[in-house]
Length: 213
Image (cartoon, rainbow, N blue to C red; front, side, top):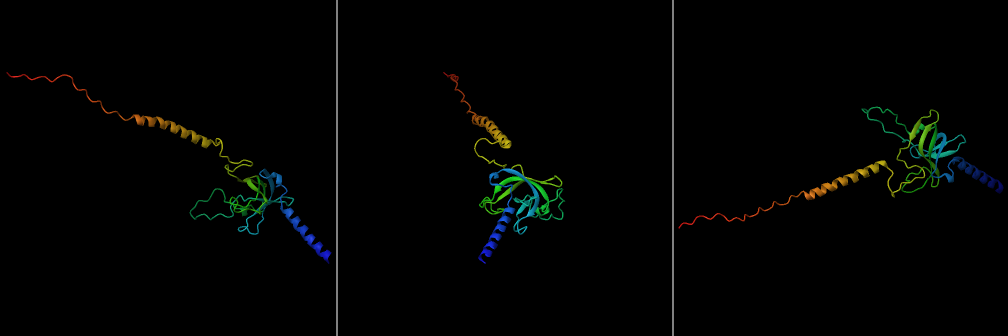
């Protein structure tokens, strides 16, 4: 009886561990944190509720499940009646479910804290921070992160000169404006005219009037 109970517990434990292992991605290994990689598979909802638990995974052909960040809103508000129809359809994550995609992103690890108020998984769980999403069937790029996104293995630094051409141009313009302001300030200080000189008094004596005798 005791052996049977132990065998059942062992079987359940092994099955639970196998389930967890099947849910983990073989792509996101410990040695690839902060590295860029590409995976391919079907987008599925991993959470229990689309709105209350919006966690998404890419499932490959071996049924490996890789958590990914969402690249579209969960819903979009309806347009006003008099608003023009948008040229590009407004998609949500629900529109992409059960479709195959090639996803490129950076391997990150969930960290609970002020910078991650809504983690997509448990602390320490790996996920892919999505940068580019391409539909496999059509080859169309459905999402591409903005250019101001920090690339992998690069962190902003406040030391040294800036490599941003816009900031460099603004700095040059500011310095040029300061240089132009200097002579104007100096000329403004010298623009006060000195008081007119006092006319010299004549050294000649006024003519004497004749004296009557």
